[in-house]
Picture: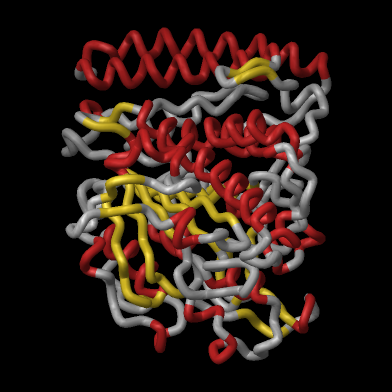
Length: 458
């Protein structure tokens, strides 16, 4: 299913040098941001936000998720779930004591709404659900989500307003149980799971018949060669760092071309998405699917096609199974099993560790992109959020939050574990706004807002 039209906006600014260097049926080729060609900016790179959202809380949080830290909050060891993030320990900020107050019944028009739907709608909006015709008489969310608020602030700066990527997130007939993102009151945006559609959205090419594909490949090859020639013409005007970035960018497009030509990627073999009928919903092949989607997303950020992206790893009521880790249990059903059921808890720990590995993949890919004296991660904020704190009691307290990247020195993501002592998640959203340079002190329900969380900001 195609994404909403809002993601098709195109605006070409002075900074977007050679953006849209396209021919009919070719990939939209955009050079990365080049400070040495920018007017009045020698080291300016955009700020970016990436949010990974999973559901059902975390099992055994005290022993499996909360890290060990010293008296100053410096993390000394990561527990089971977060262990895949060990290579990026110094880039992390792990939060404890952040509460999703808006999910609690006193802030909802009807207390009987499903807990998962309240949590998913509220985690980025800070607002409750409407009443409606979905399960338990629930409706869609009542306000804009943080990602869309920031995308609106940046409107016109990039070709794509924002990306909503689905990591095996079925649309569930457009129900509220799968709506993480909101353009506004009662305006859900759904994530895209089909990698070929996502590629089309980012790089401007739809799924074609084989004969058409052959012609497209030939034209794309020609365009890539033309781009290489054009880069040679401006090379003398570029700094050494920018020349390296251009070459890196060109190589990335060559790599994407190989993925679609012969069904190969650097992370393994899988059928070419647009031409071999790949089932993007096959949970047993999640490694290849999520790797491909994450790599496309990071390349879109590197090209400055967009600066805002969310990745939705299913949802609490999305009825996903655990085939990606070799089990057939229902994720949602398993999350309701008792803490005393060691087998169920072990499987949930394994699943959440898998998702932590996907989060680590995002961080690693962003670190590969050099920007100035640092990497894309230094100019970005990457956040892993959840719709619940714990699944079997639908707890809204202690929502697990992990962050990486310091957003150009505004966030203290420096290998710390911070206990916030039951701070509202609305204040967390406000804190992110402040880090992006927008000093609003209210986001979502005003009564849940007390201002930014100072210990998270530089």
